[in-house]
Length: 394
View 1 (cartoon, rainbow, N blue to C red):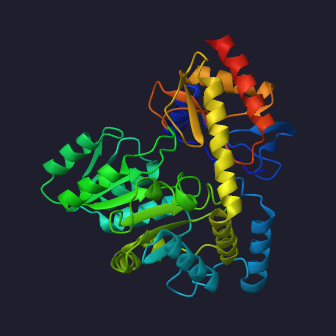
View 2 (view 1 turned 90 degrees about the vertical axis):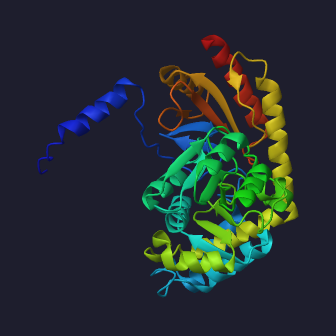
């Protein structure tokens, strides 16, 4: 074996600092599909940290749709959407999403991160500022940085704070928020923010990665919950890697916005299109989300959320105000969060500790996520295990 090149001292120092602060991240390899009863390192666990909220990631109908689409259109996109990579399954999915959500156009992206980078870097700039929620996802922040746009962040969920920043700006720009916040599980005040954007002539963008499929009428997400539409929410970003159970992302918008993004959104222009097989599977997922089965899964998930919150509210910890599948328990100290996570593993429960810089310093937590595919017995195991471990630690 050839000798390994010496690593820079600054790199080794940064890694050592992370270790000392109990903030090192490591990859976990699953030996099973994305299902509640999973195998990790040859050990069985009941997992409560997946974003597969409706339990569709291993659904036979999606697997069959992916296989059938691959048989007809192959696996790879082969090129960007603008060269020769836009296949019929992509077009069918875009049209179905646009019809479902009530928008003129939908554009597909390979990932949610790329969708946010593409949209914000195209629409914002040195002379078009960005104002966004302080707890927005990293991809939304990075999009503004990529655009080299003046960036201001308002207090989390605070419409008055957002308004102050809009009023201070001499030129209109882009107001951005998550729909459901990925680490807290709460829902943004979208109706009020939309009204604010309209009053000040700002563009309004929502990333509803964690709401679509789970919330609102037919699973239309925060758009439906807030009573908004294409006129009051002109830029809606969604991902397929959560409730849809597949991979990729989209932006739903108007013809004019879509035409502009097609010309100037570099992460859209200069990358290979998502797999047509994945587009076929995602279309099948959308049909399920719209169906009676999709509604039944949403109702089951809602029941799980109610049960979990009723069981945990008496424990000596802070359970955040969330009515979504994301149910964080604040621990505070990173070392304590890791310790509790390890103790839960000994009881057969896999729940990852979330630490800075993903969340603010002092707010390390157990980010518990519930799925329609969990059984009542799974929920009982989770709550019994949390009661045992948390009572012993606090």
